[in-house]
Image (tube, rainbow, N blue to C red; front, side):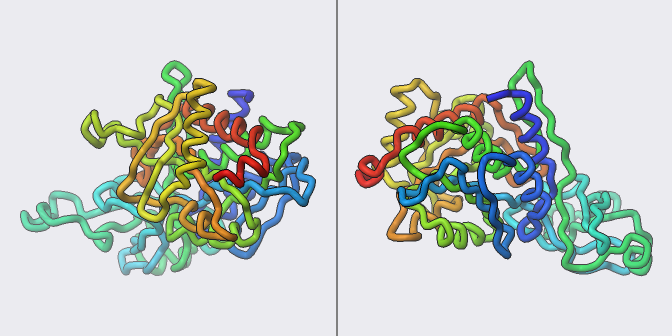
Length: 358
């Protein structure tokens, strides 16, 4: 895996604006970086399918999954003062939203800059200061001075997406990636890296990548991809919320720089225990650093995939992401690399006998 080329790919996919339902630029970027790895298809939900060029047909199918959307917002209304009222797309903590740059798509298809704004402390009553921040108290300011100017000069209209404005950075000294939408653009990049690493390798299975839309609003895209792909087994790549700065030390299960995370359970899937143990034992055998997690909440596209076909053994390979579902994420490239390595080693060993044993 060429590190510099991989980081350039991760940066390009991360920087692409693509909140739920508006993933077009992400799909375009993934197509560019996956060019030559196989045949592409798309559906009306902007799900992207990558059929590995070495597939032969008539064999068991492995679905590699990731989702293309990021958490963001949608323009709900234009206020008389020219600021934009919005609704969230995906899960946000309201107090994390204000005072950040965003991109607002206008009627011309351009993304124009804005700032998420709330009432300054100078104009808040004591009661307002102590009250929880409501999403209706947060607006996007694009610099317009009236509703008319926002419409006529900035070409704003309702129903348009709003995405965080963050540029990818990598710190070589500390092996740290900083950027937006690591949940789950790191997963999208992982599918490409996996296909690149296995290019020309003889496998006993066919492999199809499914870059699914609208995960953040209820795993909607994956509900279609699994019906299209009809997998016999699946690997879900995710950017998983890191817990190493959020819980007591003894509870930490998803820390950065300790390897990818394999979850045993979340709110919508009990991971197939036989496939899970197979992956964990492989990590031990090959000395791939890995973490195990038991999650009370959260979910992935595995929720839809594992219940499709006649039941699909599914594991989640998660790259830990500090501060997921905010403007900024922090992840380790080494964790990303080890997640891809694990997926490749699993795929090299999968055959009908192994899959049927799960």
